Image 1: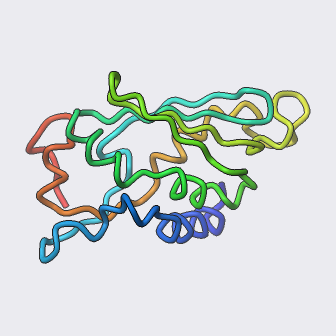
Image 2 (image 1 turned 180 degrees about the vertical axis):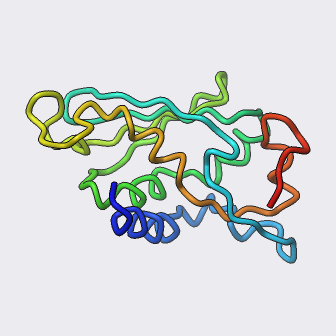
Length: 152
């Protein structure tokens, strides 16, 4: 993804929040920091035809609870809009503390039919981990792999 597409995706991701579950306005009066999704989760991705799926696994159960209201299907869809993604579907897997996102038609045919560099969607998980999130500074600490490692 080139820088202009990445910036467009980041701007769109901020607009594509499900208002009912949006936590960006939670904790009023608390200092906020901007972090990437990578700070609190890891991801795996792959292809299923011309669609892709991305599994997002927060490092901690508290991270899962936090992302449940912040990492919506609408936000992920807006982030990947420059790639021509269809309506994103999010599946919650609370027993695994994870999410699975299905990105329809993002691979432009997929496999050998696509002219994209990543025709199998392997890099999409890594791209999603670059999504910026504005979070309360105190909330981020409990979402880290090892508490006390966050330096704004």
